[in-house]
Image (cartoon, rainbow, N blue to C red; front, side, top):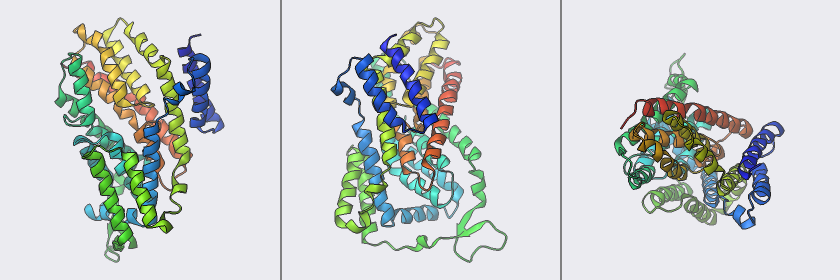
Length: 425
């Protein structure tokens, strides 16, 4: 049996054990990376550790550390109250505010994980305080980020359009942008309806004593009137520095966040003392373990093995559908941008035949490879999981996993039907 087939079977075993035995999947994945890498793939220790996602580790630790400090000194309470005031107390608008904010950030140049790192802690904090579905709030953040992620000036859009140009494929930056925005906006609308967003319309926060009898209005909590003190002002300044640093100066969001957190800890050690213990270490283990195993799969050729198998399919439309599904499945565990860099060249032979429209195919691949980033194994999904408050974390992980699986199962098919079958371009 080839190393590629062995690695796929081991991945199935990892999922089965994690599901049936309640073992941290990250720990299982680290063990699998070691066994498959050394025994089947011929990798040494350095080769296995080369796939450890150090950047994602720092993002998860840095962001959760910073916002743990922000919760301890009351800054997140102040931000939540400000969000309520911004929409006039209409709780139902808050998920859409998060969608628009993350979409705007990625559209003007933020990488998707950076935008989610900035917005997800605030969104999930609001969800916990006002009893909104954390899955709804987290998904709105991720889909908002992906909705704006393919604007012509965005990171994702620039990369994909550059790949298309280098491979001499006819593309359309405008179609690519609106394809992603439309698909993410549509799924956000469905989620808002299914996960109870419409019920939030009956809830509105008002000044204490202002609501009449028999209404669904709720008095404003006392946190709405918390004054800004020194720690809050400095923390807010640090959060602004995080936004500016990642968007304007292209600084790493994880390193920037952890630096701000350390400075706050030095200035106010008492309120920051318990913050390190609030870093969601099981989530860090889970994500880093799974991504290390996926890196081993890539190193020993499993990803290329699956991709090359698709190229032998003689029916271009079917091959295009399979490529969309490969993009969705693999991207749920790996870098979306890196995957698109491999998928688009794989589509070149089909596009060269003239039977598949290149504009629609590129749009379908981009949507399929990014909408699944709500998976708890992707950076965005991991940030949602790590920042969820007052939830059963195992249960929430399974909810994200099920939702991610549904997206993987449905979105590539819809993208194929909408963009490929009509033969756009």
